[in-house]
Image (cartoon, rainbow, N blue to C red; front, top):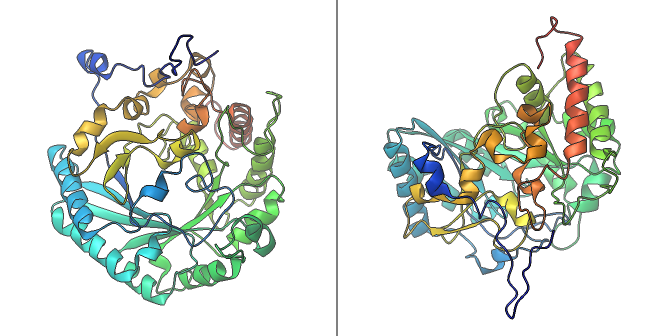
Length: 409
């Protein structure tokens, strides 16, 4: 399907969800879910140059126009807006995720200021902090601050030294593994164990799946996140075949699942597998990557721009933008953005193909960004559709052997 029209001024036709009429949804009784998770882009640059990074290596280069660090003034406004939103919707707890770029580049004093300012602005709200870092700069001074302030820390690592350093190099071209391994060893100490959030790993089909799992598990993280590389139908992920029956990422993940599940009591959790099992047993999802739980996440950039999920940068320039900023707009205005509404519609926000699928409530269409196809926008199955179907079917079959008949969906 073409996404252009003929005429003296050719222009792109609007793609779903730009065509979604939020006013009609509200008139019909739909109500948006208030935001509960806020990603603060406290620093807009990074000290690594990972070759698959969706922020710096893809079409959306908006980072280059952002201030280096979130200023004290923007922090104060963000804190006030989040506090107002929580009070208006009577939300007892919110999650604030310190992010970047690389958030540790903001420095210990600025991070301490952000945490203090946020909590002071919302004294009646439980403000839970976490951070996603590449770990290169993580040391005992930072960890002492995070332990004191109750900040959970997730670290990115793709496996052992050779496989990690294939993609995750410093800006100067050196490998990052050894610095990150030192940080993970610190996190494993008893005095810092309480802030250890887990390890995030992006899948590379060239790597041995069991070897990757074992290398990550050796750091004894409380959780491992295995992430599918970002891609869309316009720009498929690495190794993805045009053959819709092929599911190379499912094959990779199934190998890990069988090894992990077969351990009986594995040393760590794997979030994707645990979420699938939880959904198959009738629960709801706690992540965006799977399931139908409405997304309640919002991004605030270093200049105060309000954006949707960062992952949308894989789609193209401006795909994550809302046209709003925290200086001039309260956060409720973002609730009526079509892209935000689309991610809160459950089954109604999925394509006909997805709604007809036996695993629709488990898969949930996969990550929203991965559904994008020029012309139809996000009203499509995930580019990982075959992979998700095969993985879920395998997990269901495996756990059914251990459950009373009919318990798994």
